Image (cartoon, rainbow, N blue to C red; front, side, top):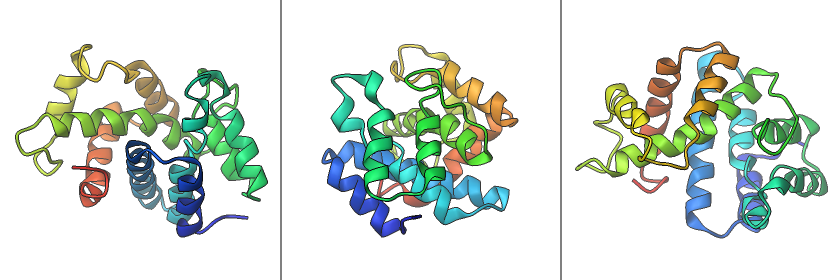
Length: 188
């Protein structure tokens, strides 16, 4: 089954209570929908994958090696389609899974998962606390500052963009554009 957005959001909230995790899922959903539209792909499917990608996060924080593995179980139990489960698992490639991102949808998720966090954090330190005046140059400046958003794996994002076949600057710019319409929902 491919869940509707509402079903996916309900499933996510059943397993995650922290508002920051919900907001992260909404940000990734928004970016995934944007990139799906840009590629002429199924926006609903990509959006659902974005919503569900960290479904097991709160249950695996004590043992991050289980991340994406428990997701497979939770999503299978809910009757979610194997393509969605595989995409969710692929975003942990090289970190906690050996499921390599192969489809455009999987490559997008792998690349933008961490990037959304960097962009949102960059917006939060601006006087406006908004994405409306955040541009590529500002994000690239923060990218170079290793102390800023220390937990964001910049190398993983760069590898993802390369694997995806898109210039990193394009991925950053498009992700900013993707998040602008939903900035209130994601806490900005």
